[in-house]
Length: 166
Image (cartoon, rainbow, N blue to C red; front, side, top):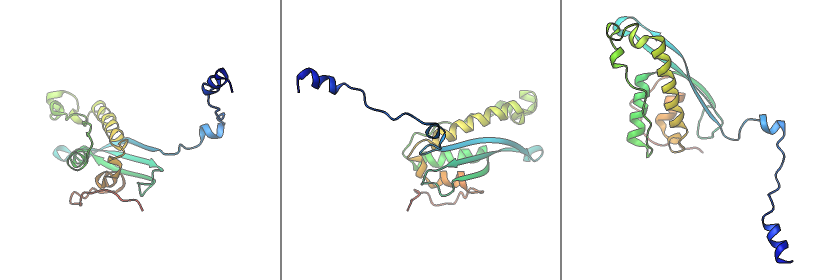
C-alpha cells in the first residue's frame, strides 16, 4: 500500500449507524429524574410550614425503588445537605437561602415566607439543589440520599454509610 493510500485510510470518518425513531424515543440507558413540585402550606400561626413533593424516577440499579414520591420540608433538605457534607467526599451545593426578612409578614409585606412567589422561588432552588446532588455518582451511594428520596419519613437516627447493590 502506498503512503498516500495509507494516510487517506487513516483519516476516513468512522462509519455510523443512522438513528431510527425507535432509538430516538426509547428510554435512555441510564436516567434519574427528580422533580420538586406541589408545594403545600399546612397549619396556622407559629405551627405553619410548607412542604414539597419530591418525585423520583430512575432505572439506575443503585436505587431500590424505580419510582417514588415523598413530601419534604425545607428543614429536611437542610438535614440532607448536612449529612452529605459530613459523610461524603463531594462538594455539596448550597440550598436556596432562608427567608429571614420574610419571617414576619409585617416586615416583608404580603404573606411573608408563605407568599406564593417566595414558595415558587424556593421550590425551583430546592429542585436545582437535589438534581445537582443526585447527579454526582458518589452521592448516589449515600444512605441518607436514598432515605430522603424513597422513605416516607426521615430517620435522623440512621447509621450513615453507603448503599450496597448486590
